[in-house]
Image (cartoon, rainbow, N blue to C red; front, side, top):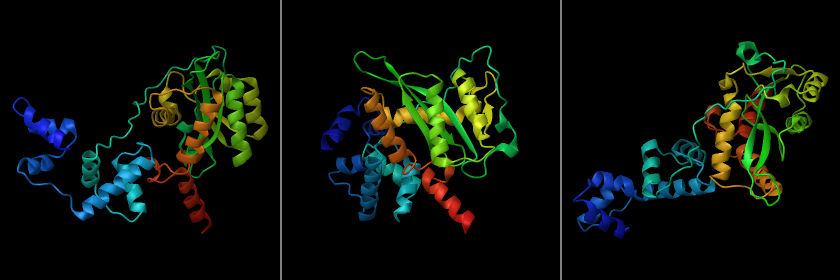
Amino acid sequence: MAEIYDAIDMLSAEFSIVKLCEILGVSRSAYYAYSKGSTYQLSDQKSEVGQAVKEVFEEHKRRYGWRRIQAELASRGIQAGRHQIRSRMKDQNLIAIQPKSFVPKTTQSPPHLRRSPNLLLQKPNLPVAPNQVVVGDITYLPNEEEHYAKWLYLAIWLDLYSHRIVGWHLGRHMEESLVTEALKQVIRQRQPREGFIVHSDGGGQYGATGFRALLRSNGFRQSMTRKDNHYDNAHAESLFSRFKAELLDGGVFYGLQDAYDHTFEYIEGYYNTCRRHSSIAYLSPVEYERRFWENAIG
């Protein structure tokens, strides 16, 4: 740390100390204390919070910003405000992964596709409990594997109420079976009732004969985004933005098995069970569902 303070001294003739401290990730109070020949020491309480912040940050592999860290600390009985957490993060140069902003992509819909109406535009169709509506999408995953294509494909179904990923399937293609197999997982594990809404964009996989037959045989209702309005499926698409940032962080997978192993670990071992979601009171999807059913029964 002394080397950083000395560098600030050297550069202060050309640049402001405020800017130098900001760029180099040190607090001004610590720098000024060093300049006066004293050592800046955090109080015991702040040191403990700083250590706890670092532990949470590392446990969640750089995926948590101050809000989720605050919620996690509170669950452990540690109360800390926004400014304190942000200061402790800055002191330790803890910078969370930032996903790219959601940008809707254009789905190529076959011209002959009969598009289903968007049922989610009607308020009575919005979920008030888990297992009423799922939203789905497909994304590309970079693959660096000899003799195979450079892309793998992941289809997911997300419970719109709890934000739990309730079905997913990974493959080397993006044909109808990719989304069908993911939906079959939803059926096996969740056993949705008749009237269950299955929402997606207007991609050809969702309008295929076999997929629609699966919906009809289970009494499900199909819902699709409006033509050229891809914000209608923003929940699923923004999930993929977060997924790629937090899991891949600019990297690639090395084959289908590697992608499957890491995807399984992220979805089943982290996203559904541990990761706190701002839209559901900073709880994990599994915990949010547990509390819902506990209150419903109680």
